[in-house]
Image (tube, rainbow, N blue to C red; front, side, top):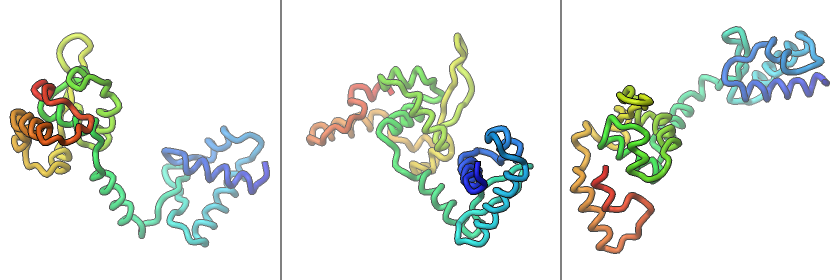
Length: 197
């Protein structure tokens, strides 16, 4: 492999790696190159990142190498993370979050019996966004995980405490009013199923 191509291979690996990549790991993955070749490719990448205008740099950390964002751009990354946390939830995520909020602690099976569809991926999304958390395990066969809401859930929906959630009877009234007013159904839970929440 030519040295110029090795540089791009190493760069691609660095971008894809979830943790710092060591010279030894590169040697295990790329045949026909020496430790010197890999070290020189890393040095060349580092020089390019330092001399050309880039928002990132190559860092030697934890015994390996990692591409990191320069400190001066951390403000923008924080804003990106914040925007992602505040991003709109899908209808499925809203339904699942509502079921967890009203029935907690609740198992995945209980959520799915109310929604009528597999909710594993939706629960995973809510866990990743910090809106729900695992509260323990249910008693009985299988010891299923129990889900509950988090402080982030309260912040996301502008609540101080769960008691501020509308009562189930109020939700049913709202849905009945929407139906009477001819508001088009957007695929959510039907009014008769709200009482199951």
